[in-house]
Length: 298
Image (cartoon, rainbow, N blue to C red):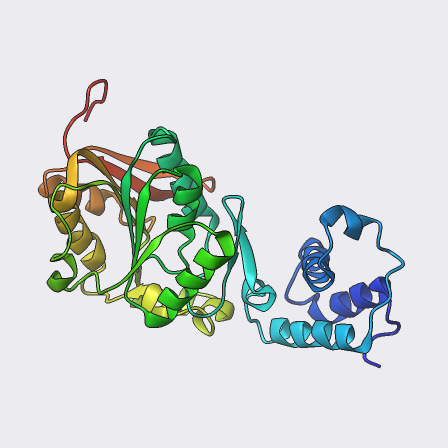
């Protein structure tokens, strides 16, 4: 047997021994907890009082398989197969990026800017797992929300999360860079455009960790060094056409490109441009309006 006992203590000791070079003690405790809760379908409260748990051989195999994947530096969220985001539990795997805390902050920003009872028309461009689209639908229950995504694999993941969350989001499989994509849309019909597009220059790959480079889809991460604002330019140009008067455009951005994106948005006629820092103090979000609204200053 690869563990000293089939108890929860045995599992904890096994994970600490094998993963201490990759994870902190706090992280390992959380990993064991979340794997156990998922495996046994118990609550966090039940886990606290489960020190006397005994696991079957199939249970032990589940833990060993998970540990081997973690030892290969596969992201824990993919190993677990799910992530909590904006009070939703979403399926995640290598078909799409793992939702990040700064993306959740972007959703909070949108949620604060509009009344939850409004019948908004929203499009989430480069939707990935659908985390933004479903979070906004959970907040704005009367809204019509489209998740636009180019990757066939990611679109299938969005549909799975639609079934999982029972939230009604329309999935639109299309390339944001292709003009044909927009032919079926009505101009000046959206209240909100939001996007977390690819924004990491290829030259920064060498600075990134193995668990990102080897497992998360590069197509959703990287953009050519010669044109790092490609997606922002294309999306902003279309958003200007398809947003209503007073509509809002939100982006998650690279911390180094805030000033450039502000200039870009001004060039398309957007106003009330606001850059915002995340909880780490990095400039990671921007909002712009199609016109100046009362009580707002540019």
